[in-house]
Length: 44
Image 1: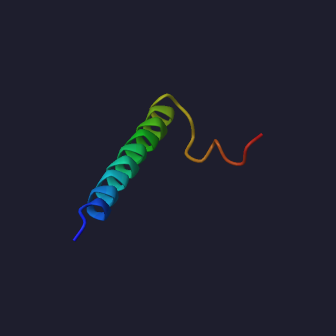
Image 2: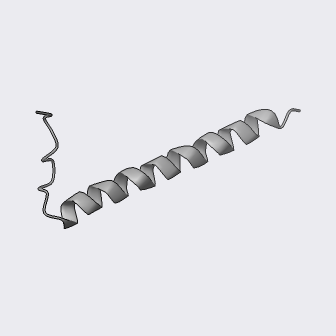
Image 3: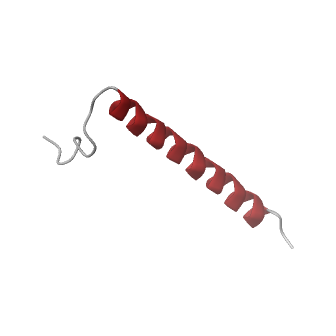
């Protein structure tokens, strides 16, 4: 049995979680500095 699929899924899951943390942090920074929720959509 190969270990490659397990390692690949683990790495991809870790990258996805890291990306989500960056997105949520960015949204929180915008909110704390006065941006209204959803003010970035629709794009202008």
